[in-house]
Structures are given as C-alpha cells and as structure tokens.
Length: 220
Ligand SMILES: C[S@@+](CC[C@H](N)C(=O)[O-])C[C@H]1O[C@@H](n2cnc3c(N)ncnc32)[C@H](O)[C@@H]1O
Image (cartoon, rainbow, N blue to C red; front, side):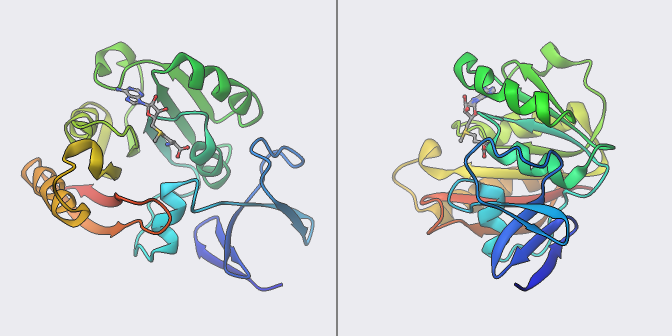
C-alpha cells in the first residue's frame, strides 16, 4: 500500500484521501478505515465533502494545519468537520455553527468523541450571537445560501485573524440558476476581491459535486 502525505495531516493511500483517526475505532459515517503501522486511517470521500473534492481536483493550497483554529459555518451532521478535526489535532479547535436543530442533534455525538469541535446552534447571519468566539486562522463556509459570500465576509470581518484564510464552498444554483457555475464563481470572486481578499485558488467541483465550486482566499 502506497502512502503519500498530500498536505499536512492529509494522506493519499493508493490515491484515496485519508486522515489519521484521533479516536481509533470511531467511524461515525460508516467510513472505511485501515490500520497501517499502528495508525488508523479514515478514508475521506470527495463525493461527501467539498473540501475533499477540492483536494482531489488539485487545489494548490489547503490551509487546514495542525493546531489551528477554525470557524466552520454550516457544520451539518459533521462529516467534513470530523476530518478537519483529525487534521488539526488536540491543540486546534473548530467552532462549528449550524442552525438546523435536526443536523445539530446529529453533530453532538461527533463532538463527544472529537473533543476539539465546539458545537454552536446559531444562524451564521447573526455573528453577534456567538461573539464570544475567539479570532481564528480559517473561516470555512458551506451554507448553500444565496448570500453565502456576504455571510462569509461578515464572519471574516468579525473573527478572522490578519492574513487569515477563507475557504468558501459555493453552491452556484442557490445564487442564480440561469448562469453557469464558472460565471457565478467569477462573480463571487469579485465580491471577495472588493472585500479585501486575495484569491489563492479555486476549483469547480464536478463530478464530485455538480454546480459547486470551492474558493480559497486570504485576507490581505
Ligand atoms: C451543504 S450542508 C453542509 C455540509 C457540511 N459542510 C459537510 O461538508 O459535512 C449546509 C448546511 O448549512 C446549514 N445552514 C444553512 N444556512 C445556515 C445559516 N444561516 N446558519 C447556520 N447554518 C446554516 C444547513 O442547515 C446545512 O446543514
């Protein structure tokens, strides 16, 4: 079995993405795991996670690293969060915002095992409701709303450190069904530039997620 470290804490095992499980034996999404040299690897499915899809599509930077702090908007039931949790380790922290009570309920058992995830039931449009959250290195936004870029920018203005990173999943159909994924992504990129972000890279996520793109930007 060939193992390559693609980015810090993210491995390619025979061309499949994986992280090292920080709670060995725990596989909350029925994911495939493999023990190699006494480490348990969890396989990370690009069809279920836009961050994983962006890596497979060849994004050149991936700002999630060991020990960092993340504000995650739209945690849902925690699939992607659980892998980011493995990467950042126990010195890092994820503040996971989710406004659906049903999803939040499913997120809680993940946070019990991966203790660096702090679940917060709140609307990402109202950052004043979680103003106690500290400054973070990365704002990760995947909320599939028409004003998702504006919401992401607002949260970055409140919580992102200087030179911090924004990782933005864009569901282009939520914004305008009449335009192509590329056109909408360019439009959202302009909004980010006007708000003082440098665009580091972006990818269209098909075939993993149709009509989605993923933007990695940095506050300058
Ligand atoms: C596409 S799903 C996120 C999937 C998740 N990021 C993953 O990869 O595992 C979008 C989530 O954002 C949540 N959401 C949408 N608008 C929101 C808002 N304004 N505040 C908080 N959560 C929101 C939805 O309830 C949903 O769970």
